Image (cartoon, rainbow over all chains, first blue to last red):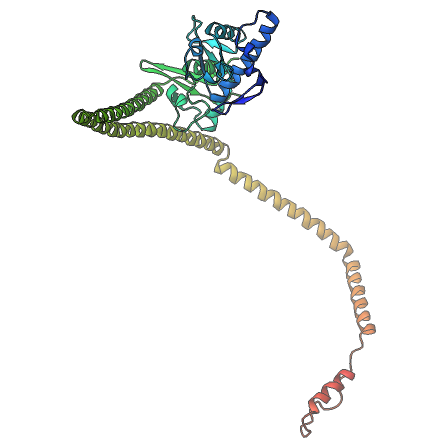
Length: 191
Length: 202
């Protein structure tokens, strides 16, 4: 069978290696395995970026019609990634800070950092500045669910918190907590 | 970085605004929920109709109608809340405008203190005096000049005048005054043209 790239229904271009059956199983040779893992991580990150997916779970390898089905299964060669295999990738990704276990202290689901929290912080700040919301008190809902779609639409709250905390280190954000919930205020960059 | 101390204080106003906004979010989420219920009731009614249970479908549709009215009401409430939030935020802007005006006013006052009317008058007086002094000096100097050189200047002026008159007499050849009478009353039509010609030729 010749290896070729393939465009999925969602318009994602799968690399040719994705139609190689050995790519879907763990390789006994450590060198081969590490190369395959490398490829998988790159694939997961670029697919997440393409579909704006934030959460990857071990069970995504088991369910059909999940968000990740297009890359975790390849029906053309009748292969799919097994859950154990997927959880290995997740572990490596967390080790390299390309993902974070969310909720913490479990290993079944991760937040995929196709933008690093530091990058999200800048995206967030740029959005706030360009939409003229500096010094305005915003709720998390304002950010994750704005009336007009923004780059931050549907960003998971834990990731948002990280970004806010990063901005807080340079005095660009301020968390405000009251009994009913939390909000945040972004401040102009100090000189 | 010492960014922490530069953070503005969280005032009770801020908390109140946040509270309002959180309430608003809750309403929005509630609306989402009602929308989901609406869709669900619609699906139920459809399924019941397909199964032939007309009365149950009717009940589902009634429930749906009720939820729809709730949705309308929440819309109104949401509008109220958002208006309130906007009003508060606008008032805050007004407060900061007022603050700006106040500061500007103070600066102006400060400047005026340094620049009171008396000192301006004094300054103007001094300037006038200085100008007067300058004028006197000028006058003195010019007087000196005329006393000593008046004659020479006059002479020079005369020479210039003579030069000019000499130039005028040598270079200009003025036509002679016509000796003949300008008008010949008794002659015919072409006569005036002839007179003109003579004048030019002369």
